[in-house]
Image 1 (tube, rainbow, N blue to C red):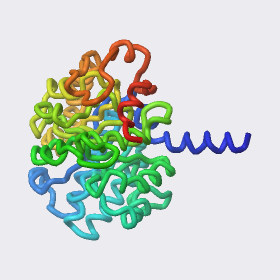
Image 2: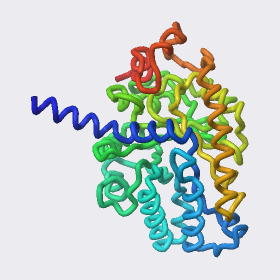
Image 3: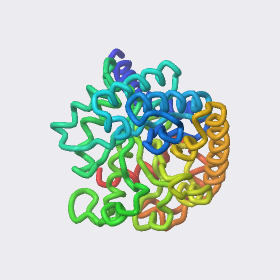
Image 4: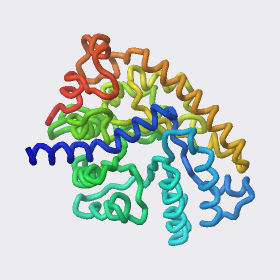
Amino acid sequence: MAKATREEEIKAQRSDFGLRLSTSMSKFGPLCVGIDPHRKILSEWGYQVDADGAEMFSMRMLQAAHGRAAAVKFQTPMFERYGSKGYAALERVLYAARQMGIITIVDCLRGGLSTTISAIADAYFKPNAPLKADAITLLPYYGARSLNNLTDEALSYGRGVFIASLTSNSEGTSLQSAIRQSGSYKGKTVAYSIAGTAQKFNQSMDGMGSVGLIIGATIGQWITTGGVDPSKFTGPILSPGYGWQGAEAHDLKTVFAGTQGNVLVTVSRSIATHGPQIDKLAQATESIALDVRQALSEATKETASDNFAGDAVKHDVTAKKSKTNVHTASSATTQSMNEGK
């Protein structure tokens, strides 16, 4: 009995981030406000281009996002350019976000050998972590499995990760759509193998998983070559590219057709250009949040193209979706995304 209780506690802890994010998305919608203190925007706002300016910018963006977006995302390089003062500023704005009850994602895009990146948990996940966040972004190009230990640590502390799979930068196409020549995913694309590795962490979780993917909103023209069907993934999907980078509502409907409430769209500059007045930032946040919510609502009614599915199970999709939602992965999903287990 005690063993069963302990197993349930561990499962609940590993599901915690996905549950909290899902709840926040249900309440505030699928928008994640990107907090990227670009030098140009700091100057336009009349702020000094330094760590203090970045911190003041971030605090205003937090106020605009509070109660209007499901999460916020901090772009680490925009702070680390100021050295230790920049990191101190990031610590303070992360603390402020926690006090406000806002879910935080740190876009640090870390990766490396499993023997070296374990230290990242000390920085971001542990109870006394200086840069404590709800989730961080990861790069899997030392091998997706090199991230397994760090991902396990994140889950053990009730945190989450987002792993780059199909990014919005066009230069990534050749790498992410490359066909693997060996291993469990031989014959599949690199992007597909990353998605499959991430999905294995989610298959036993109740509700939306805590291990997510990064899939850009601008990739509609080559998603087929990536071999990944976002509608088959049961963790959260973080999607950059909407607004300033060119993606529009129809792109969200194309890329995320058939998804069931697990897509989180990041928007930064399209909101920040309305500052520094908080009321105008808030209005822009509300307007964009409404547009994103509407586009993704329409996407859930679409059926993903068979071309998106790669080797995923393609038959009887409509019937399966009627029996499942973002909280329950179908047996077809589990089988498809975990191929090669």
